[in-house]
Image 1 (cartoon, rainbow, N blue to C red):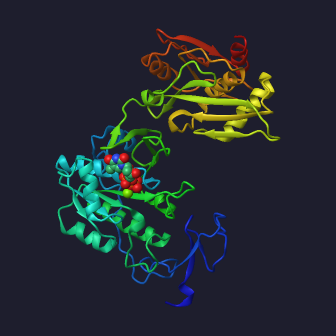
Image 2 (cartoon, protein in one colour; image 1 turned 135 degrees about the horizontal axis):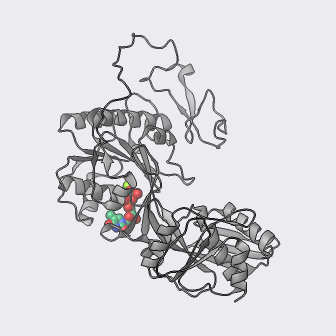
Image 3 (cartoon, rainbow, N blue to C red; image 1 turned 120 degrees about the horizontal axis):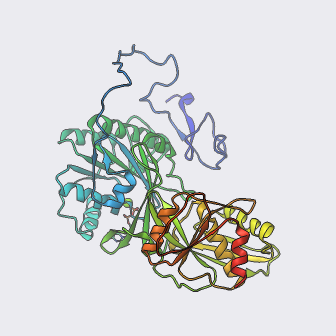
Length: 455
Ligand code: TYD
Ligand code: MG
């Protein structure tokens, strides 16, 4: 290989550099450059093509195409996130921390499909056949007709897949272990992962099989190295969970064929992953109603309402700069709520430590949680419990006004179903009926503070 062909590729963003340096110019990460030789399979740049192109068919935009054919796994929490099952011929990336349960989930899904008569090939590059079998026994799905393949070379995998009957589902566990002859770099490097994924995705598109790639996530929350793979696949699902908690959340972050705001909730048990069809019951499970600093938020995750408890602890600080710590919510959003409480509601928190926790290790991204957070903070500061069996939702603006949030009716319905007695939420223009619930609509954060501190 001539020296000019060597390049340095950032393992974080895939950016290329002609020479090594400590920092990647593209994404500013340190120590991420690795020497790689460019893949020989793809001609790059003008003037490289050596044979004339072939004329391909042009078709009109208007025409009939079948609705993306899907195969349902019947694991409804998984089907919810994919948008109704695996789409044939599509590629899906399932990312997550090591040990979170990706292999378990995919083995269970594979077994379900295989039992229903779909061909399933499970390619394990990470674990030996014996280990995969042991897991299948533990999951009580060793009897399912899943074909196992222990191989990491892409050419061999594709030859194996093409030799047999076309499978409906191919699982690659994991993409980081694959390597192709076309690239000289080590497995796991960006160019290997990119080329391997490209070859596998091409196979999926041509054969009509669904391809599931498993990818490990690094500490920074990126699918290790091959962030590039995210752009190549049709859907990206993250499997997440907090250490010490048994439940796991499957979250869609990209989906060409379905929603991206849905979550699937599972619980890791001794016998594998169990679906949690009503997550609110799980997140509210250990609630001790009348404690100061606890507020229940009625949140939406896709089409489903999830009730979670938000816990705050506000205590006088012994430090010059008080501590602010958040688990499960955005810390800049917390700073904003604290600032609004100070500026518009006369609540002084400048010399207090503030801790905020979303119970059960759940993670909330909706601004609709603002009101519940504020209620929890004020309740803790005043050392007064909030009215028992109330839920809270509403977005707080910088002026201290509350903005109504979407799907209020669904949130109230779920609260009623779970035995809550009332709700405090942002007043909106739409008239909302919720039989059996005491509705307390407020229009500014100051109203809430006055209400709570009056007690
Ligand atoms: P695994 O699916 O191997 O994780 P990943 O593929 O994401 O690395 O799951 C590993 C963890 O799950 C491990 O800590 C053991 C636990 N586990 C259970 O608790 N119950 C089970 O039935 C199985 C198969 C695993
Ligand atoms: Mg695994």
